[in-house]
Length: 203
Image (cartoon, rainbow, N blue to C red; front, top):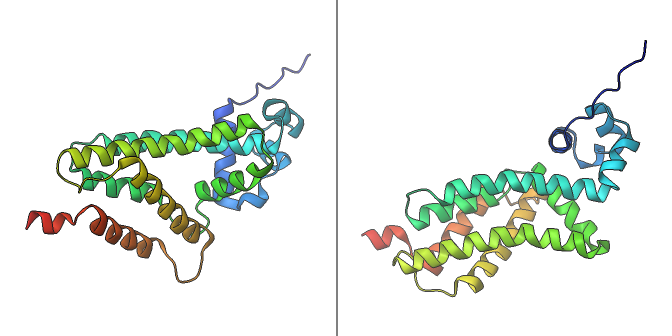
């Protein structure tokens, strides 16, 4: 009797398993062999699909970003004041804490990007571009409605995201003296000063 070949799991299942391994065991435990055991595939089979670990990590980041993008779209499309939606954007952006799996993966991909080819760099830029465009649109909307002080939305978004990236790295690596709630307070205060304090505006 011929033994039937087991079908390979869908790529999305492989990417979800990779993300789960990062969350549970840390990035250092994510090897092709370990992931293969997790999903019932050989490391050679995984390499056939992904070519290299760098490509696997970038694909996993793109998959994770797709999920975050859907959540971001839901939050930003709500019928709510622009500042409430901006706070939700910031809350989604900042890591949940030390060793946040998405940020752990993000940091690793960007570290490896020093030697990445043009295609990988373009894909990384696309990830950043999606966050930037959504923020620019929200800032422009808030200013047009009089909820924010007038700003150059593109320039302000670039600076705000640089601030968020710096704080987020501190949270993700567990820098002593920096935690998520402290970061969120700093960012709220910055936004109050730069765009106007909603509490004062209502008073």
